Length: 184
Image (cartoon, rainbow, N blue to C red; front, side, top):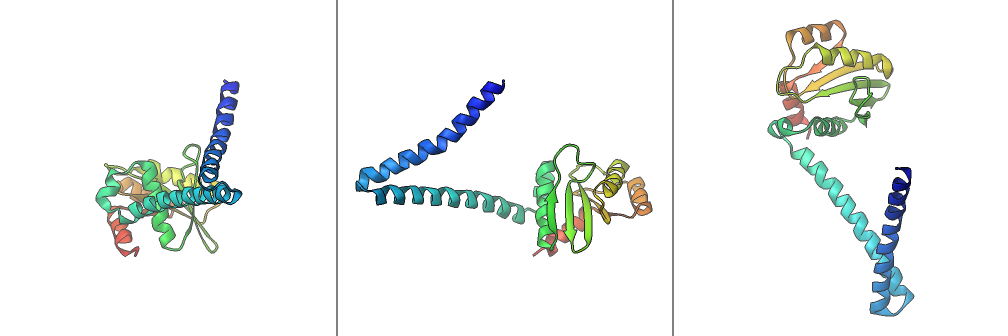
């Protein structure tokens, strides 16, 4: 198993060299000079960088244009990314926690001395007390000053009561729509 992974790593490292060699040969073939090789490689690298930037900004553009209907169709991870983008637009420094073992926090927002842990719940039904309990645990784990739970849905009465008792800020569907409309 380990040897197979090492072979795959070697193949992955070899592939860019092969591509650059082919591009360099193309430059040599058409110009018969070192300058042609260098120009071809530089143009190829610029093309790859431009393509990566274009792909990344295209994804952000899709997130920016998303409304509540698009949010309802997102996966949980896409919803986390969307919330991160929304909070960045509001001036927060956003970092994402790993998918598993995150102690209940999906996003960590920083604004001056404030550290806010956010749990993102993209649900079709109501969000219950479990989400509030998890974010209360994350509050201490990440040494945060505030805890928020954001959803594209609504919260149960029990979740609202528990959140009020533990000073957890809840962002429900209506508030999320307001944030989307006012983000620009």
